[in-house]
Amino acid sequence: MKTNSSSPYEQNKCNSAVQLKHLPTGIVIKCQATRSRAHNREIARRELADKVEALLKGDASRVAMKARDGAKKRASKLKKSRRKYRKLAEEAKESEQGLEGEDGSGADGVEAKSESAGDQAGEGEKG
Image (cartoon, rainbow, N blue to C red; front, side, top):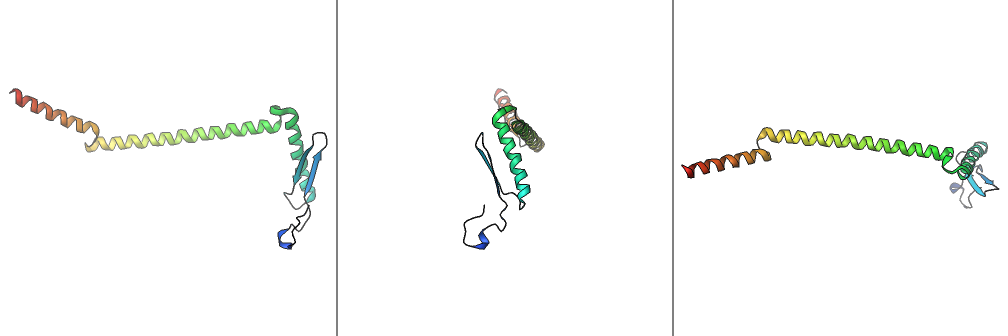
């Protein structure tokens, strides 16, 4: 299976592609992964066997189970990553609040000053 190009630079120099067809199901597999025809044939047979098994067994096939396991691993990894960055964000927020409390410029410090000013003004009116 070579290309129909007129330029020698645009085509594969070795004709090692393989095409396998499973006659009962009509599944066709093409493989041109390596330059070795024998190796391409092995790869194509493996792929064909996996596709036929997936067609016959459905979710119980080895390929489907492997895909489910991979999806679980990816989901777990993503969850762990989210947990890590959420924790880092909370720590950063706590450290910011801790710095604001030391400076006296935090929201609590402003409220305390206004309350004490109001108390002093109220005492002045009474007395």
